[in-house]
Image (cartoon, rainbow, N blue to C red; front, side, top):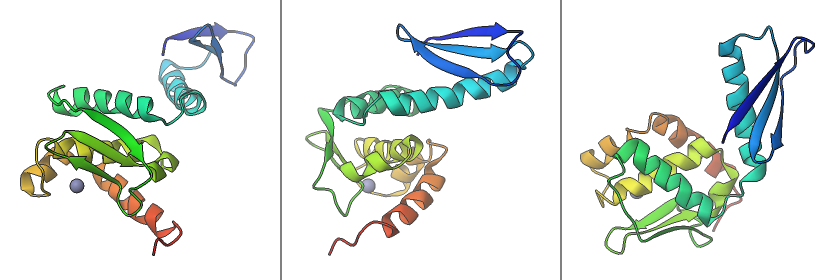
Length: 163
Ligand SMILES: [Zn+2]
């Protein structure tokens, strides 16, 4: 997302953002430090993205491509990645041979960084079908893996029981 910053001496404290022709325009006080402005922009972007980008299969594919570049040097390829309603007891699944990935639809309710962990987990299965040592090392490339696992365990405990 392209960001245009407009600083104003009249502005005292608040930072505001709005979308103008596909760009995020940030209105900030002239006195605000660069570091503080960066933090503001990151959280504003996250909020805007939440509003504008629905969690659909296109989103999932874009996310997987991004994570592939970031954690697998773009080495992985797959046939399809999509949400599934039939993954109630699972977070996702990967058909190693057909190279198709399914992510549970339930995960549209978790924060992006947690869903990213599940995507990284399924992407890692493209290399390693089982959950052995090599697999775990791949998943740990995602720095928030441990936190995401903890989050998911709590999240799943709060879900209605699934028989
Ligand atoms: Zn797995």
